[in-house]
Length: 139
Image (cartoon, rainbow, N blue to C red; front, side, top):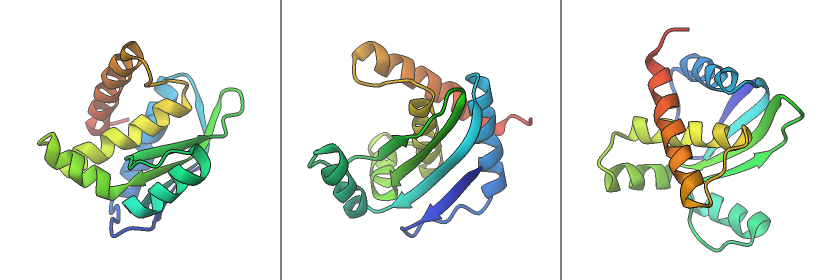
């Protein structure tokens, strides 16, 4: 089950479209969906999680906690809507597109994709672009 929790001003209106899209991303990578919780929050909220759980004192757009069990993807995906907004401006893209990029980025982490090395970053970016295009495809 995919659920959305809002601890910032963001509210997703068409939740069922997003749930369907995320499910299709998961299936396209050969997994099934377990419990996935998206928590949309502020920079301050995510910074505290980053300090507490990862020992990082930096702002970030996303933190993913992976609870995958075999072929079933489960996890908590925390997204800073402040970072998404700033990155959308920085990269001159629509907020909705940047939000989708970050949302699928979290699912891709749960599917085992990393983003530490240059090669991993390149693969992650290619996967993000592929998955964003799936948002407009009917199931």
